[in-house]
Length: 565
Image 1 (cartoon, rainbow, N blue to C red):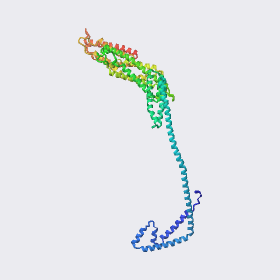
Image 2: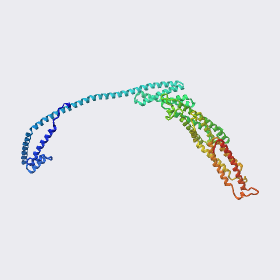
Image 3: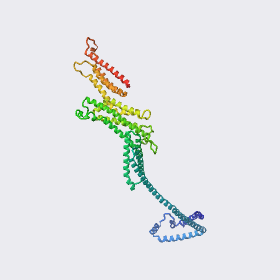
Image 4: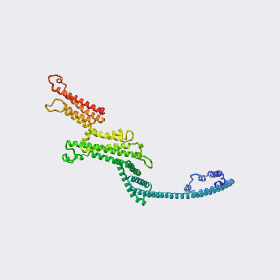
């Protein structure tokens, strides 16, 4: 409707004429004979109350009223003259005002129609929006109800399958039972996933199933754990794979492998504790003589028997530890070959996201380190409980070291993970590091024995004994040195450590020899008979020469055995 309106009149001209007329009238008022009475009515700050107050105060009300009447008469005459002189123009302006009024009415009608159209448009848009909004909420609720209904139906279906597989697992053989348990575990895990994703609280049917699901979960885990433990101990790879498949379906593979690892380490510790349990050494007839079983052998013969039996047990212990290593290796092989049926991911990669394929043996190498640390820790605890065991492990440390190194070599040879085996020099170093405490005790004992023997050579002798060091004394010292060196001869690294410790103790011998050797005039004077000082110096020289020759023989044997220091 706006485009049909008539053209607007010259409103600017009308306003301009009105302004000129108003200015002329105001000029007449302010300039009519210099009358201040009328001119004050055109001031911007005119106040009628102040005008009345001034008239009352001056008592000129009558005069002022007469002047006002006269002024009004003058204004009327002047306005009449203005109207008469501008009659044509005023008539034109009145016509234009009518046109403006008509135009205003037209605009007002257009605005009213526009408002009506807006109300109509708002109504035509809002009503469909409210309908769509309502239907959207209704659809959302329907979808939520549908999801819950589908979840309940799926859980009911899976529960039936779960119950059926559990029943079949009870009647089938071990291999078939594990396969049924794997399927049951998959259904149970899916049920758990559905319950975690959907808000199913308050649904009676599902609430009544929760206790049964928990019980079934416990039963599956218990049976799979026992099956995995038995399969690992029996080294049956297929049964290990079946049991691991159950835990994979439950999403608990890392926990299952860790549990199996803890069980193997526990059995290894028990084997070490049993092997070094002195309460089972000897027979009951010795118990009274030694003041209670397990406190120590009653005599040297019993001590020899105890020592032989303990080393027999230690050799059997190495076989037991080798068995645990073999069990772990079989578990490693299953983890490196078995794949997840759904994702085709190796179980080893499920266990460790950083695993690098089938030939990654880091898990087995880590188990080897844990096994060695656990075994040595248990040996140290047994040594703390029994002095005899502590003395045995300290004195015969080279034998223990040789047994463990033989175990490392066997493991390296029998693990087929590459040319160098699953364990290498790093694992060997780790094993030897675990033995540091026993090694230090052995080295300290070796140095102490040699030092004590040297000190015994230079103690005061009874009167009448031969002067100076004798061959028998040196033979006693050499026996200890030779025994110390021979014990570590087969292991070059240990032989070098023992030789360094023995050299420190023998330095004491050299120093004591220097102390007792005299370099006086009496020693250099020749006479018919040998003086005591000369006899003493000669005995010391002979002893030193004898010791040096024997040490060179021992050193040659050590070099032949592989020690280079």
